[in-house]
Image (cartoon, rainbow, N blue to C red; front, side, top):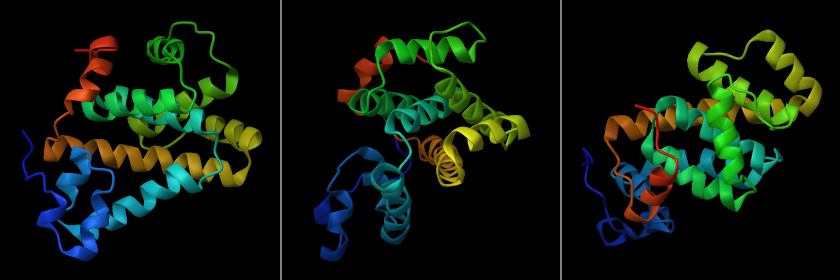
Length: 182
């Protein structure tokens, strides 16, 4: 159960009701602080709609963070979103196997993105060789975007965990199909 109430548009000032145009429980909790919710949504909006990074790679990076953090909310939401952006069930299984050090059929760039997300999540930063390889493959703009995405979603999973945001019923089947470890 969440540590703060899930608010509805009617609970908000008229100028803040747009913050719940996507009425997921994370946003319904964040609007307890409308200015913080707006700032959060600004960066999240750039990541989803402004970055030129391939959306499949973006979603793989986010899923890797969710898997490592064992965040049911992040994991379930981004399996669904990942499907919307070209991540297949085979890709999800490959992410799980790649994380465990098992061989996969993922392409080299996808594996490198997953490695970068693991390094930033586990070690706090990408290793030099990983960064250099991504920079060579993506260029400066996209490697900065990827770094920002991984960093932002590491923050998101901590917010989700601390506020104890529940997984909405419509996302639970994704957890049933791809359960988190432990």
